Length: 82
Image 1 (tube, rainbow, N blue to C red):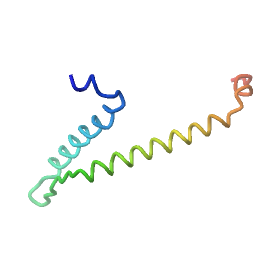
Image 2: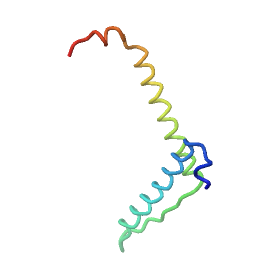
Image 3: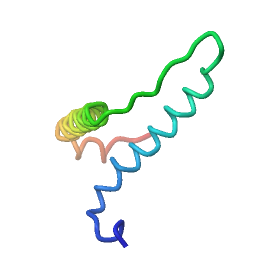
């Protein structure tokens, strides 16, 4: 089985791409009327750009959360009463 032999994190972008294609196709079918017709053009560059943007956003978010966690006064947090 190909999926079982892949790295666990490799399934995330692949799943996102498949879901993205499905959503884009559904949106294009809902918009397709006699007045407006928009073609669905999916290229390797589109997927590469999308994966890079999501990876950048996830990395920046993780760095921001990590920085905020390092700034916490853990002793003060544990002593604080609700």
